[in-house]
Each structure stands twice: as structure tokens, then as C-alpha cells.
Length: 132
Image 1 (cartoon, helix red, strand yellow):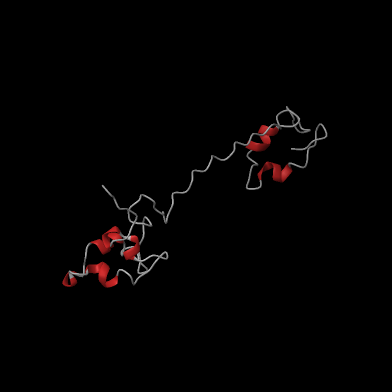
Image 2: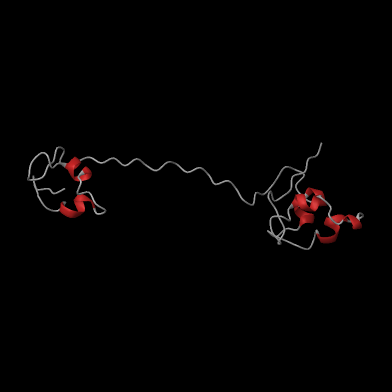
């Protein structure tokens, strides 16, 4: 058994995606039954460098050997974004005002606005030769 696949997969003519291989296969030009839709307009409205007569099985085109072109391939899966880990340096750092004002305080403080506590005071209150 020889099977046919419309090729390229997803083809439609230059008038838009309504006018695809299924449209041409429905044979709307019934009054011209001897030639049908494919015979009347199948070689006219080229799209993707292909006409209905070339792309659609219903018009005698398509692929009969299983080789097809996909116009809209599924994007390859992307890997998840890398996990970024952060380590306080030096470990256990806190600012000059004492252990309550450590890296956790700077990252979660009520002062954490759009610029963050680090953006407001991060360059101040040096301790251990380091600021937040």
C-alpha cells in the first residue's frame, strides 16, 4: 500500500490558511467535475514555493515515499535555566552594627525596595573589610 502525505505538512495557499490541502480536496468547483478545484486553481496560488498540485495528495502531489517537509517544526525542548547558587563571602558576614544585620537581613529587610536594601545601604556599614 502506498500512502501519501501532503508535503510540506501544513501547506496552505497564498490566500491564507483556510485554503489548505483539505480545502482543495473538497472539490468546491463541482460544476467542473472533470478537473475539480485542483484542475481549476491548483497551480495558481503558490505558497512556500509550492502549489496545491505539488503539495496536496488530493491534487496528485504530496509525498508518496514518506519524506516530508514540516513548515512549522516543533521547537526543540530547551533545557531548564541553570540554578544559580549564592554563597555569602565571607561566610557568616554581618555589617558593623552587629550579627542581626547579616546577608539574610539585607536580602529580606523591610528596606528591600525596588533597588533593595543592598542598593540603598549595601555600600555602607563595612565590616571585615567587606560591605553587603
